[in-house]
Image 1 (cartoon, rainbow, N blue to C red):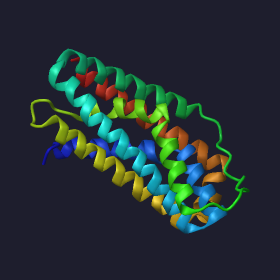
Image 2 (cartoon, helix red, strand yellow):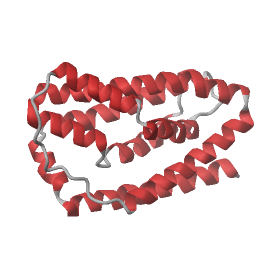
Image 3 (cartoon, rainbow, N blue to C red):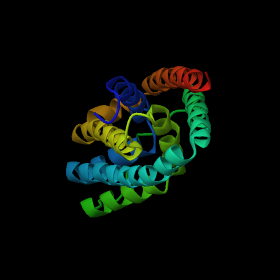
Image 4 (spheres, helix red, strand yellow):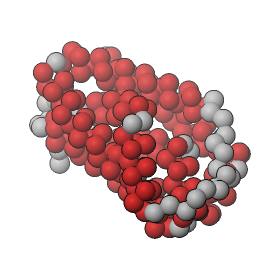
Length: 209
């Protein structure tokens, strides 16, 4: 296996914490599903994953070059990424409530849902920073092909994302009512925020020592 199973499991856990946090992708998927139907919702989910494929491809080419050619810079990026994860955790703890009740809007086609989601994801700088924050911390330059390790992590992230977001689209009404409750959102934000901070501290200690 390109990535050590323990590292892969830790990456999946960290990715899942980030994925389940209510945010723009969740809002777009629920809105498109409720206004235009399940097929459009699933197309929107597909669009998000296409965006992640683009980010993964960029990470493979960009990060692999840095990790292989500039080990010192790789270490700095890993620590900076862990600090960014801590910042995301802090933001999550202090996050407000995402308004999920407003689902009015025109009916759109699956093609438009897919295209809008892909473009939104590709152009979202937070997704780029997330890749830079997460991936370098779970790469071992001495364990074989860095590109293959990055591809493995990217595929794992897409799988986690697809499972969660696909479930939202397939049963949009229930999750929307659940996630629309301020109490649920705040609980999720606190839990994910604290977990991200813990992850970040552990990664900083690992790379700094």
